[in-house]
Image 1 (cartoon, rainbow, N blue to C red):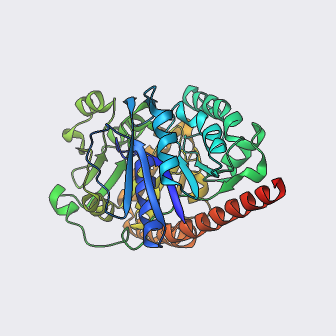
Image 2: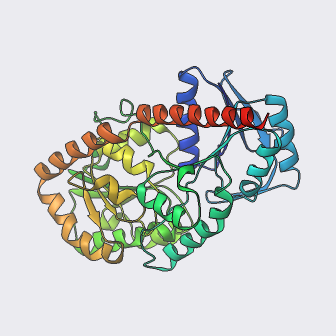
Length: 382
């Protein structure tokens, strides 16, 4: 089967990781994959000889959204005609091209699957979650014309169905993590930072991630010289927050870490992983931390609360993050046996529900079902 994958390769974000992990896994299972992504047309492809890359021209792209060039739809149509894939899978990049894909694929008689990533909150409790709900309202009429829309949780499915997407077109396939690569193991992190207990946040330093609530709680707790809060990532709030919350408070700012093995080492060295977001989808960083055996604390935004429910971690309310953390941070500092127990439960939850291998098997079944439906449709049309 030949899959034309439309997604992102830069700048780094969850969508980039999702596209890389899934396409590599499909290649490993014998699929032919063509990767169409927004890039300068003279850019040198980074993929292996097995992965054919096609550049789609753009005017602007960020971690959140992309503005294609006026030529992008024409380039996409020409590329799909030349590639002749069996199916198109769009890991939606929040660009105007997303809205044109159903019409393009219908014209080319190609089945179309989408993965819809935007974060959300199960309740509109703040301005950020209300803004994300508008994104779902904007996309729903167009997602109704995709053959399948992949989302990560039952909550997300219910929201799209309420907004008019036919229920039979919505498929729940949670994110998956390579649990062999992301696993407990040795780490030099505590030696490097001269710390006995390490707490980690990994993600964008942006308003919706609510990192300052964590920083305020950490500073208020006065965690002492043996504990360290490690912040991994970059974003618009990095300069202001790092200037106010520094090493004197036991906080280490590592910035964006490009090397995957180094990110794994950081997670292996973490006793506690904290995700204080106001909105989320299903955080790959959270799943990676769980797979590495860290105790995980995350808000009930998006599907993260669903991941940690029933004892796999601690679920925080988005409206009282800082006050809750002021209670929990000293608890996990003083009771290493508790973090050991919760870390084991976190990894077991990943093994039971959120492995990449399971994710790809469900994706294969979905592809086969969509192709069968297309054959039935064409046989009835003849």
